[in-house]
Image 1 (cartoon, rainbow, N blue to C red):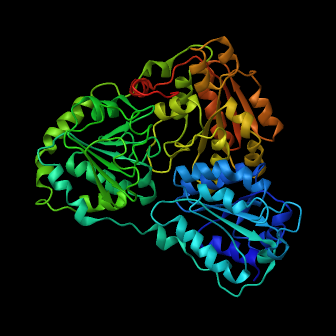
Image 2: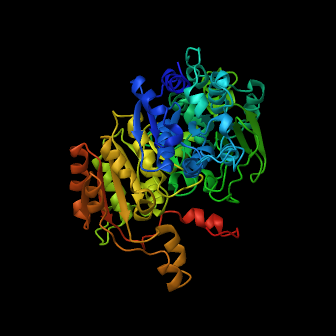
Image 3: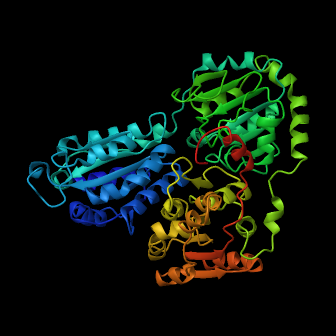
Length: 569
C-alpha cells in the first residue's frame, strides 16, 4: 500500500473513525486514499484551525486520539492555536500536514514550508510532544507509531507529522496495527510514595479531594465515587474536570476555582481544611482561586501527578507522588481497614462537616437563573438550557464571559461531558470542538455555549456541522460585546468600552445562510421553547440569545484572590 493508505488504515486501527481536514495541493494524494478506506469519515472544515479544534473535541469527548489533516505552510500555521489549546489541556491530537517531496525541498516550489524555508516542524515543535517530517517512506511506520506513543506517554499531548509528497505516494509493505488501546489502559503509581498518605491523614477530619484534568484520561469515575463513599471524602473538581463525579452526587461539592461553587469554595478555603488531596491538577491560577493565600490546609497538600514540574510553585507544604490520579484512586479504594484506620475513624466527623456545607446555597447569585430581565441574564440562559437538555448532554464551552456562567450554572453528570479549552482560552475554538464531540459521540446531544465574538472568529464552521449533518446546538450569548474584556474596560472609561463593543448581528439569519436552523430569543420566556425546538429538530441549530453584557460573572471569590496580585484579571 502507499503512504496515505497506511496512515489512514493506522488511524482506523487506533479507533479513529473521523478525519477532520482541509484540502489543498500538498495533500492531494490523500483524497483518493480516503475513498479506499471507507472506515474513516472525512469532515471538510472551513479552516484548518477549525479542523484541529474538531479533532481536539473528538479526542476529549471520545477518550481516544483525534486526527486532522491539512497542507503545510499556511494550513499548518492556521492550526497552531488549536494545537496550543490541545497542548495546554493535554489532549491527544495527531496533526498531519503535507509537504513538497523530500528531493524537491529548497528549490523554490510553491508552498514549500520545509526546513529549507521557514520550517513547519519548528513552528509546531513548542506546542506538540513531537513534531517531525518523515524523510523516507521506509520510516513512515516507525514515525507514526513513535508519534502515537509519545502522545500517550504519561500526559496526553498532541503530536505532528509532516508527510512529504514522495512519502504519501511511496509504497510500504507494513500492516497497520493498533498502538493506542494498550497505551490508554496503562496507568502507574509510586506505591511507596503513596503510603505517606497514612501519615498525612492522622488526626485530619476535614479532608477533600480536588480532581483535575489529568484524571479524565484515567476513566476513574467509578473509583472516585467509591473512594468518596467509602471514606466520606467530599470531591471538588477543577473546571477542566467538571463532571468527573456526577454533580448531584451526595459527596460532590462542585467546581473549585474560577467560577466555582459556594460549596467548593467553603470546603477548601473557609472551613479550616486539614488536608487537600490533589489529583492531576497543577494548581494553576484558575484552579487555585488565583493562588489564594487561604489555600493552606493544616496538614498540607498531597499531590498525585505524572509530572512534578508545577508542584510546589505556589502552595506551601505540598507533598508529591508521581503517578496517575486514577491509579491512586484504585489504590486507595483497595486499602485495607488497617492501613486506612485513621481515615475511617474520622469519617463520621467528615460527613457532618460536608452536611453542614451542603445545607447552605450551592451557587452564587442563584436568583439570576430565574431573572425576567431584558436583555436576558446569561444565568437564565444557561439554566433554561440545562433544564431542556437530557441528563447526558455534552456541553462544549467556548471562551468568554459565557464560560463563567456555563461553568457555574450548568451541571454535568459524567466524565467528558463538559469540554472547554480551560488553559489557553482561544475564542471560537468551541465551535469546531463541538463538531468533533458530536462526531465522537453521535448518541449524545451536544450543546456549544459560545458568544458573538467567538462567532465572528470561527462562525463559518457552523456550515461544516450543517453540511455533514452533525446536529450540534449552538447557544450564542449575543451581548454585542467581548463580554469579559468589556466588563473590565467599562471600569476604565467609555473609549475602552467602545473598543470592545460590536453590532447586534442576526446570528440566526447567519445560521440559515449556512444551511443550519436559526432561532432568535429576545425574552426569557422564549428560552425554554427555543431549546426544546432545537433539540427536537435534530439538526445544526444556532439559538441567538440576546443577553445583557453588563451581567457580572459569578467569579467574586476568584477576583478576591486576585486582589493581592498585580495582573489584568
